[in-house]
Amino acid sequence: MNVRRNALASGLLLLWSVAQAGSPSAPIDGPTYAADGGLMLPANYREWVFLSAGIDMSYIAGAMPTDPHMMDNVFVDPAAYRAFQATGRWPDRTMLVKENRRASGKGSINKSGNFQSTEIMDIEVHLKDASRFPAKWAFFDFGAGRQSAAAIPQAADCYSCHAAHGAVDNTFVQFYPTLLLIAKAKGTLSAGYKRDEGAPD
Image (cartoon, rainbow, N blue to C red; front, top):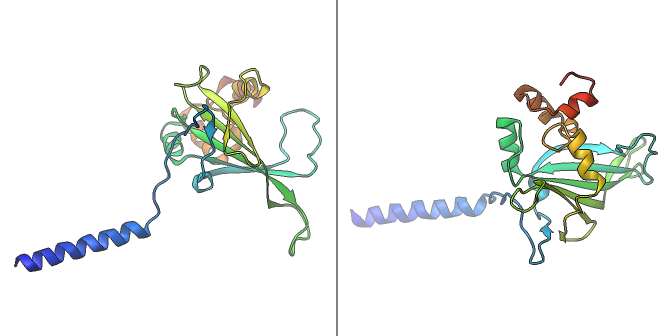
């Protein structure tokens, strides 16, 4: 009886080990910092939740399209995404990654429009970490190859622009269609965004 019970237990343990080995591990959420205090670029950000893509976007009136054209992809860490779905707000340690890629119109069988190329032009991170940054949020520019980056100084225009126009908590949720619907339903849209849209506060 004991031999049979031990064999059964061993078999179950083996099955569990095989299942664990075959299943992908969950991504680790939240920021990681280098020894010099710089933020480490999350290696698995492309496995995070995809929010939206844009092409040649600019927040400056009269700006000309970029040359070459640029397309961006925005990802958010899964834990922050789940929290936003529940509350319409970003929790502390939220990370948004904006990956900017060169757009191309020539390739394969394409005859019209643009598609994203393999060339990464820049990677930017918007991070909420109240324990490190007095204003809670910080921006980081990784360029096209760095694995760590220092925070962009608070005097940079990106901070004031996001504070004045971000639809939710200093972030441009207005450009993330699925999250914009959640923010509207939860009543978390900012007064600045409402003014930009011509809606009453």
